[in-house]
Length: 121
Image (spheres, rainbow, N blue to C red):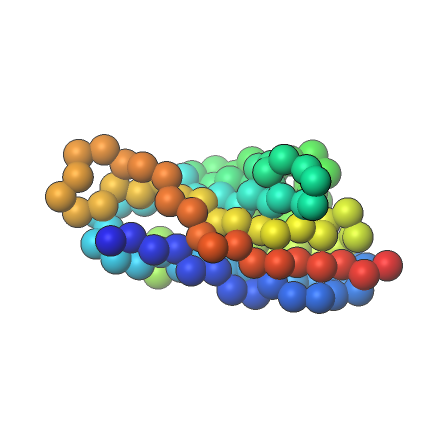
């Protein structure tokens, strides 16, 4: 059984910072890409940032220069450091990871439970 557990969300004023963490646990053989998605009320879930197992990163245009994704492979953890937060960043943030679990042939996507980020103006 593989689980992703997120932490670090909360309420912050515009211009502030937050760091999200997501730790994968369970019978993990390998982890490929890890990423963060977000879903605002009434909107579709969107990819915010992704990082490959080799450390290559990609960001949605709206967060470039403000958010940084990183990972600690030894801890099976991915982070999202968010600076200069704006009210439009308010959403539930979800962690995603492509993981090959023990006793399986193929990797599959796993999701965290979501953490609320609220940015007040």
